[in-house]
Length: 253
Image (cartoon, rainbow, N blue to C red; front, side, top):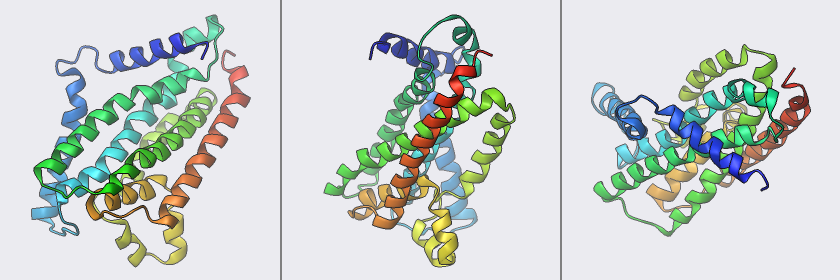
């Protein structure tokens, strides 16, 4: 709390730097998910039709928005300690606020994309249910997971520069192992039980499924899938903070 001004300044800096010298600026946060949504709707509605859900564009957006939040957070948070090397070497302040600022700055984009989601909910006349109150908790679980990932990867990247390239490859793999354009029940049906539970170690799977159940089906989260997601998120935060605090004393070196 004593360094709240520094945290606020870092959040605003990350937000401004991201869209510096771009003519459309922050509107790229709206265009990117809409472009991906259009591509996936065309592919899975016409080229390779397999529409497994009603309100298919909303179904896709409920997968894209959480994944986009992850893809916006992970690459810059991995590099954030190296990007602020000049501050770390010269100024005494708690290093822990640097990854935190990167993650919090992306919440602005998450809110914008959630506005797009609810616009589509309105346009496609999706019935509204009381289970929408689950959404803040669902995104809080993802936020906790991303904070843990940000702390762990940002610290490791200082000592092992290969981490940023592993992150790029990992995001590509994760896109296909996250239920964005297919439903989690289909995964449960087609995978053996051990592999299904291994699949659920990706917290986005449980979060996306919970969001779809809340918005499209009027049901609460699946206790197993969402419970595993919450457990992995908390574990990721504990491990990430532990790795960060043990390494931060050597960042300047």
